[in-house]
Image (cartoon, rainbow, N blue to C red; front, side, top):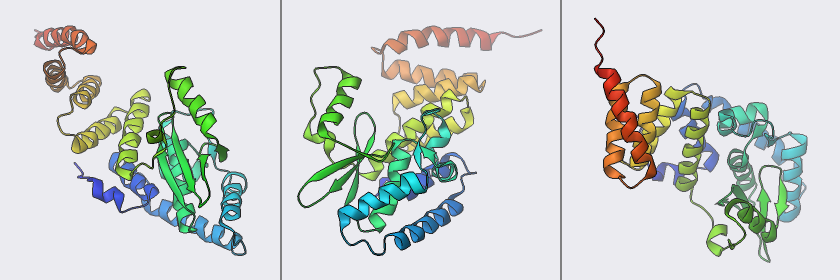
Length: 269
């Protein structure tokens, strides 16, 4: 098990923290290549913007280069593909999701000296530009600016017409919080792709952040069940049932545990 603590991520650019996370889940992640590619792209970007003096114009030019010249874009055909959450794969394919594309925007933008920060908005990751006279919001999925009216519409689409846009929704999010959400997203996509060994790495890492979390332990039990590690799965399910007896899933899992216990007790002669 790899120990990863909050301070590791606070001191690093989000994209580099994501690479640490990616490698902890899948050791085939090309960390060195990704860093070299980011350095190469930044050198190219710096050269392109050498004559730009106005920061707002520099940001506009940077977004044009990132999305049009380099061809980065949101993956509209396979949004929930796990590769979209691995930075090295995003650099290779030039496709990603808001958090992976947003991490790269922050990486390059901050090196350019632009006042960019990340927001873990309830519906997706958003990049915020903090100017002296205004704050602007960028959708990393396509590089377009979004208004607070649009952000509220996103919330309504997610949570219903009575929801209100609050200041806390627009506050800058620290890297450990973003990495935690990134980890949950990766676990979900890997489970969907039935990549159970990699998903198991996700639950182990999540439990490193929040030990004994019953919901993570329940998910780990499901993974062990898929891997035919019945006794460990039963133990994890029983822990969840004991810790969360009022959760609707607890009743379902009781029946599951009973059946699994019967099946594992069958002796073939």
